[in-house]
Image 1: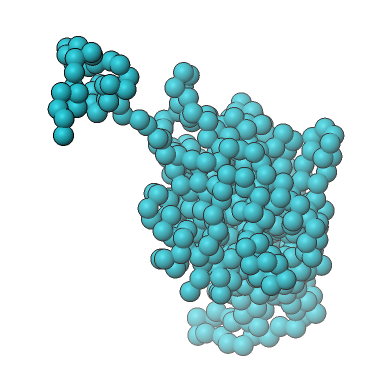
Image 2: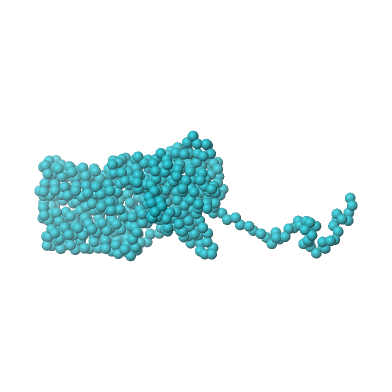
Length: 244
Length: 325
């Protein structure tokens, strides 16, 4: 079984919103129809997005940290939004685990968005159907694209490679290894939805410098004309006094 | 959650319709075992069924305003295996069909006694239809309530009290309207319906109060920490990713003040409980149809407020992600 998913590395996300714009660009130009966008340059802009980048401040001044937090559909293994759909428009694909909405069957009752604890389903107020991240299903299988471009638009756009894409059911896939080795976690595990997308925590790189590391023990004294010991610098070395 | 008036009218109107039908069923089954005098078939049961049907149709029309694509609503009957909403979509037309058949049978006089027990209880054809209708009514109450009660992370709704309150409020409002109706077309049933209305109004006052107490002490399972997966007691949102609104900020917040919510709670509890109760009592004493109708109108306004509060009070975990622009 395959379960395609994203891994988002919060350690390297810089909050540039490139994934948001590339997602919107790819999906609004797709065969499924445009995603609404009202007053984009005016007051109260609003529209449908599959992906949002939010910013949080952790801690209190002066020990604060900024967290940029991209959020899109997590393609849960047990998606609560699917069984509640009265028409069967919301479904989870058997073959790759992507949760999709059939726009031709959706009646726009919004019940699935109530049933998603993560708030990643957004109704398109023009098309009047529920929309959500498709993991760029119209892109990742497109054989007319070069193999290394068969990835979701957000993954390709990320300038810091904070977004990884792959099969989380294959234990040897690069993203499974990353989740395993870098401490990947799921959002709101308390609801048992088993999100497929994982997040990598922020990982601090700290230097621990011990006092005796401040001075080089292997200092080639002659070269720097200094001595760490009490011996005079000009005193002859073994090389000076011995002839081979 | 943002209370949608289409859903508020859907749930309250079909509740009244279901309550009226339950009242008709109760009246007819009591008279079948000769606990109540038999009523005129067309005037009382037939017209009562028409009133019930009108409320059910009203609710159905209101529900269409909630849909983005009402023309595809027929598809909503397909997922009855998993979706309570789909089950409601099936139960509602079944009930409407049975109420229609019941009304037609009474108006046309298509009725016959199928069985008479030696003690004089009579099983008639219309009573069988009424029994099926009663089952459909309870099934519909269950479906409507479970639509909300099955969403486990909307913790205010995730309780059997949700189903109980939907059932009792619908029944109470239906019985109350039937008391006024009986005062006109079947005066000897007026006090029967009136007393049942009183009992149900008291019962639902207790169960709704219980759910208010329960909801006041909910411990939310989702927190900022589980939402982000960051272990820190102080986390503040600085940007939600957009500067205007979105569906997430419009559909999931009630956008009113804490004070408004607090006042609303007591206003609706008065409007669906003590005030119609007293009006009902006065109306029964004075046998005044207008007072009884006023009791129903007050209760219905109270029900709209109750349903508004029911939605507004539910705190969706997605709101953790949408706290500040």
